[in-house]
Length: 404
Picture 1 (tube, helix red, strand yellow):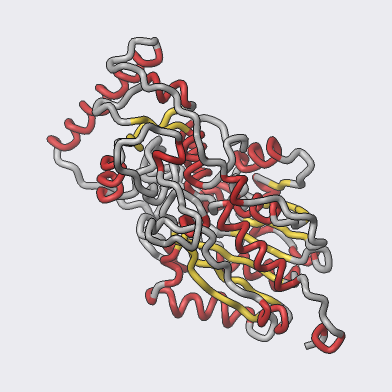
Picture 2 (cartoon, rainbow, N blue to C red; picture 1 turned 30 degrees about the vertical axis):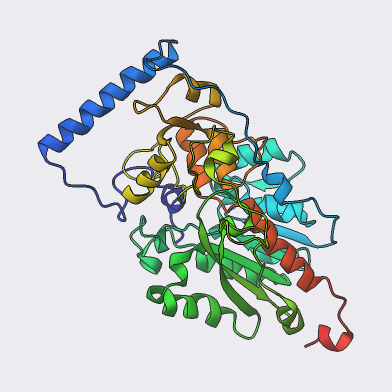
């Protein structure tokens, strides 16, 4: 029996505290009262800022110097078509579109994803809600219509934040992408996820669910990529599995090589910008890559923070950027100055740090915007993978190779 719609929605985001994977924190009364007092004080300060009563002087509104589209020069149409699963706000979709692939369809269970993708590309075919439930799709309908299938299944089953329960986590959708590939039979499929899926802990899972499942039908490459190596001002490591039906395509494929470098001693590649440089903030003599941005759909309550650990909070502090209480826009961020005077981030800033163009229509409420952004693939990294896949598919095959 397929899971109910309510349960399937939980596979993508956590809606409450009753989910079996949620582990609450045991707080003392003293700790609870301290958190409550902090929340009340923050709400009061925000209310004053909204009313124009800034506690601290407003920050000047910066003009970003980073434009992710420069990392993804639009390529001519390559004649290949692509279908997207778990599309979210379109990280992979942007990359493949900019790399010259024809968009066939996008599937995601979240209506928020549909809103973003329809606003960005009214000409795209987008399925969401019940229609976007990938567990209910017969992918054979796309057989012969798509060259590439790509998607980033929910990462929580393999992430530390999601408790790494793997196949025991009802949000595990990796088998669904593999099922889609086997039914639709595209020339290639791309599966993206957190680097945790590439660790020893999940080696047997990967072998069984991915490699063994497609054996005899697909030849699969797997590799790790770092977003900063492709010009994105954020540390974000992800694993990719790229499968090809044809052995010749598999042999031609080359994993994307870095186009940028954060290492200032590396003079062979253009430098990846740090957070302050990318966002157009004044120099303070120190800059750094953003720590991995987390989703706003995290924990028992939705959050407007992008902090994923105590270590990352220290890193944000070093560059005088406040990553908690992300604002809806830059005007609101400038008016609501953090207590320590650090620069407050906005939705647009987080989009840029993830590699999305500022014009991409990810809208408020803030926690939903951060949920979409934090769960997405960095578009420039997706673009690099898409370009490599196109090169592998783009060499005309002989009849002997075509039947190999």
